[in-house]
Image (cartoon, rainbow, N blue to C red; front, side, top):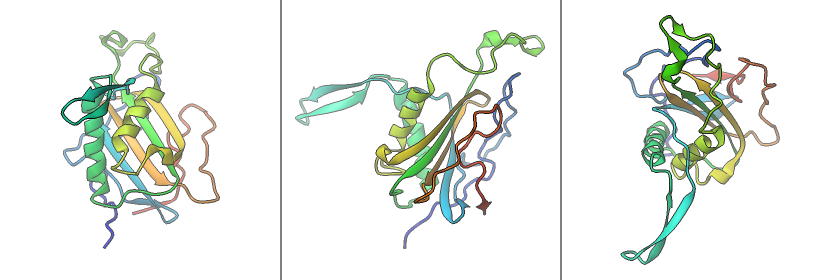
Length: 210
């Protein structure tokens, strides 16, 4: 019998996007940080949260492994390895043994980064602190690391991703909120207009049922 993702935790440690004046107040939760099983017009939507400071994927490098006799490809960014492992573990828990997703996919990766200490004053966030994290790492490299962590766990290959929305904000706790959904054939997902605070997910306007 084919397994389907089940709802593990409704809170999922998630919060609304951070405002311009500082981090958002995330709700504390001791339950697993995965929430999945929602549906949009009959299409299963996989949602889960990976807590921690997201790390970018680095350049790939290869070396000859004398023991195996093969060339092994590794990521040059050492910090990305434990982060990818966290993504993979959370994705596996969210999938709950279900079959890998097939066909075209739409994904949303929302990265919430901690503010530097210099942004804080005695009374909270300084008025001069920037509202958005426009410093490195860039969102594309952060997304690449997440895509690598989801390969072979949520889907067969990240080439299946045909729509991708990336969000990078200040927020605590540091985390990445991940949404993966099959693309409805013959119809494109709604694209956000870019207005501040309008929506942070391609799936935010979808009809959902428990």
